[in-house]
Image (cartoon, rainbow, N blue to C red; front, side, top):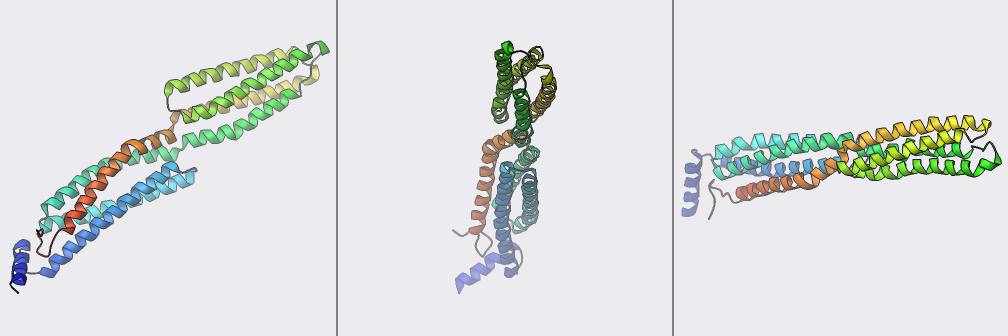
Length: 288
């Protein structure tokens, strides 16, 4: 009985009023908001990670939007929780929330950068070009050259060698496209581009040499091969430009490094906040 009186007195002294139920309700609300804040932050991080890993523009944008919605919900919890902690006079919890808010602000800025990169999907777009239109153009180039006939039997071997050389140089460019798309090293990409340029020049020279050795009936085939080669080179330039943006590679690197560290620090603050609130007793002060 005496303990109950002391507890009731503690409530009055701690809250400045005799409304025990109101104080308990605020403590309960603070705990619920802290729990929901952790849920919304987890949702934010998870959706952003899925946006980075998405394999289409549509799903990437969808997950980015989901991350933004969860971020807004987390901010709403922060705005609701802060005045309650201040009203209860919980200085430690207020400090922990402030600590999380600061880290969350840094997290949001980084996450915005990551999401902006992720939704561009330049590496995926480059990959689609490489294995789609560029592949088709390279095959059409091969097919056009395979139909080229020599003007005389004596030059047949030379025509065959030039055709093989032209096809091989285009394939060399194709082989370099995938590693270029995947690499993040500027110097390495530059070296690959130099090799691509050399191969492209060799292909053009081979076609030019073929014009002097091919039969008149093959002129249209060489014209077709030249047109397709031009198309392939244009597509390759697009692939290089998209690959150079490296948005998928960069967003993934940021997610695995800086964002991961920030996520851990934010979660630590939230768990500390929840633990502090869990230790609050009925009197509005920590029980010992």
